[in-house]
Picture 1 (cartoon, rainbow, N blue to C red):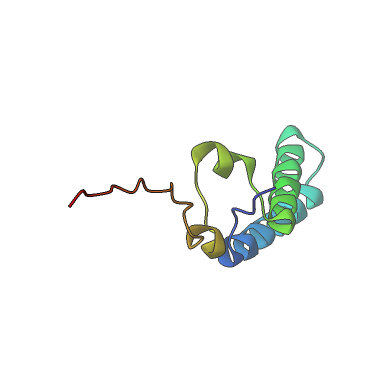
Picture 2: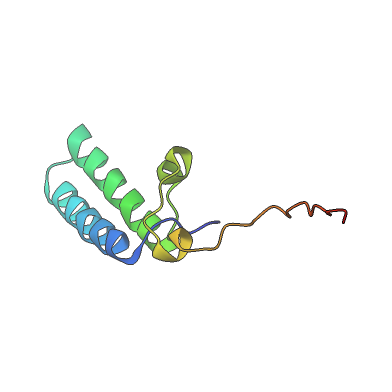
Length: 83
């Protein structure tokens, strides 16, 4: 899996995910509380793995190592000049 989540993005995901899990868990069981907990778990899992499928589909990466990776270059055709 290609890691497309950067350090700051991962920290934010963990914090928001844990808050959603907490607030979803302290409420009476309802559709909203279950949705909050599921979204929270997804955010924490994506932060731990460092990979987000939505980012992959949209071609987004907040991982600086990914952004600064050298682009593979096509071999250039050499032209020979006749003297």
